[in-house]
Image: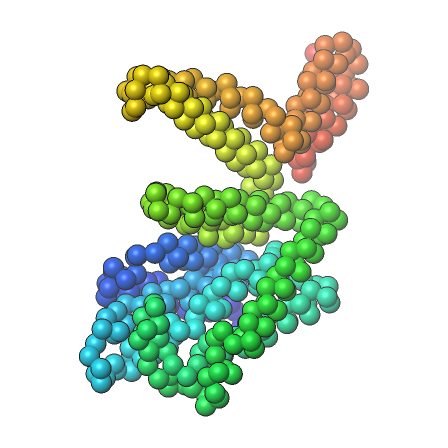
Length: 388
């Protein structure tokens, strides 16, 4: 069976649900960064599964997008349900929407973390990782069933207003509920599977060559950026809420963006340039901000608090510092993170110096082809020579 009808069905469901949610209740569907961030998984999943239908990662990402789209629609349908008078009939649509909201977040969280790590960039072929993936999937299914068959379903975010779950299977709530030791044990198993595979990625990276190595580097780059950006977002949540929300959005979108590049191999070999530029601009930004703060503090203490002269002087000094600082930092970072570029430049310079004294055309042509292969790694090389 062709995967195209399934792809179209999932995309249509996702787009329709998003559109309907926005039309029904736009305030409910647009008040958080989680929605657009996880929708980015759906967009990336649609692109990957369209071009590479054999990629399990693309279908998982697309499923995440569909789940979030349906959650948007469910949120719009249940808006105001918690404030209705007691005894008011909610209706089957509201009940179904509230029930879906009570458990959809469970597969959403672990599909975007543990399962993504386990199937990136492709489903593992080694028996060990296949078993780990199987354990993670079983734990996820059981956790989802636990969340979906709890005795009650919350009608608001705080969980202070609840309704009876129409799909409660009759087991005691103290046993079959979120937060019980059984559920916590499943969460620990899920996290352990992800961490185990993350450690395996480190080993795989040391052994990998070519495209596989670059794919792992893209994924590692996204994970490495996540932690500092998330910490900054948490630190600025109260003082700079807009900046904090923007950083949270970037954090959640980093992994699908890196996976898009890695799986489709779009400009895959630019990872060294991306890493070096990210490091350079981060360092220069820190240096400039620190310089600005020190000048403003020192000048304000001498000229008076909130001095316009201090602010103007600090701004000019910071602006003058950007270009020389960026140049020096870029060179230092490139030597560490973009060695291929640095080594290639050195080899080209050395060849240029030898070329000044070369007299043998045949040996020069041979060396030119060799240098081109080592520095640019083209798939084919054709050299034309003109004899006078």
